[in-house]
Length: 368
Image (cartoon, rainbow, N blue to C red):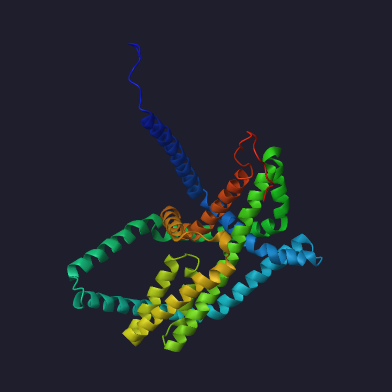
């Protein structure tokens, strides 16, 4: 080594530095994307939800078009029928469910107090100070994070206006996505380099199929879970069945976490109204329904293509909730499933060309 040459960097440190700066660049890009998404949420969120809705509504629209209905009337008819069904359900069920939701709060508070007494007087012998400390920390966390939503009448009015504007934008985008989705896709693919068009087209088909299967399958699972748990609650004699079924239905769109929360709420209601025996029976029903969902219903309805590992689901839910609250948690799992589908497509495309053989030439096999 010459006198002017400095000390060499160890190869391991060189590789670690190269990986580190690339990770920092990717992290900075992700932060910038998150900032843009938050700033443009009034446009991007309705567009994302419209894509999700289109993945479900495209099938009845295709059914109508195969029967001679033009694209615009087929899309408008499908969307209006869905809006009408949702409106009828809201008008018929909202008053009774609203009244029962009003009774649910006091019941849950009573159940929480019963659990607190069991923790202090039962076998665990947890002190009141420890419980109060946990409650205070949770309350403080809710207060601090709740401030992010804004306060005051003006902020509430702004949120209402944004929600109404987003709802109209969602309806219009859903209509055009369903009506002109194929033309939009052809226009986009036409601007991609010709050597990559087939990859983009195949990846788009895979993502679209996964999104549609996830949303349709999750909705079916939610209906079945809420119906089975509702029947169990009626047989056990637990009150407030309607709001608990609605909670189970909504919780199905938040895998693992939603089922846990809904089951805990149902068990608390049963504990207050019927005692420990009813609470244990409700827990048994919830666990049984979850086993049926995980081993029978989900594999059949969702299929293996949209199955994600529970660890991936929990990380996605947590990350989505941190970035965008409830909406982020709702979008986290389908977006993760779409990313996984795109990764699977790239992996399959890479596996088309096998490693070189002993003769030195690559072996190419037909694509999937």
